[in-house]
Length: 163
View (cartoon, rainbow, N blue to C red):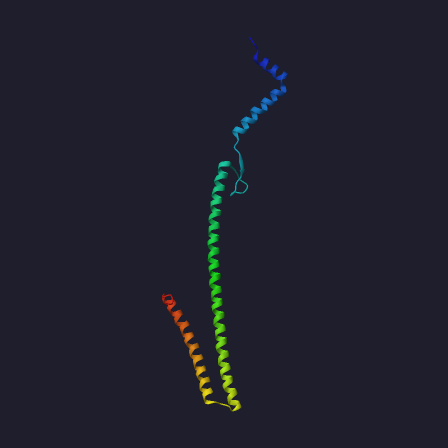
């Protein structure tokens, strides 16, 4: 009867480095097949996850970031509309201030011209009537303008949109 164990051990002794290489190949193959590849989780710091779980986290995270980007873009558009509305109000206010300054200057000029003529004793009745008429027209136009702004606000409150 043949001693198989002795034959194997003799072969191993004679080819020890080949045997070590084959043994390492078998062990590393079993290890590579038996162990899953893992990496750090994207959403749970310090925890390792499999490749499939990592891909799921990556897809979910990308979708979440896309939704957040869309929300940011919508908020930026909303903010820009607020800025445009505010700037329009600034311009409207500045135009109103400028209009009031011009009306005051005209009234002041008319009154000072009338007073100057009176001081010099050169009151011309026609000039006085014209100055008073101009003053009345300016005040009337200013009042009408102001009244129209008030009515516009009331119409907008009622929902007619100013028409």
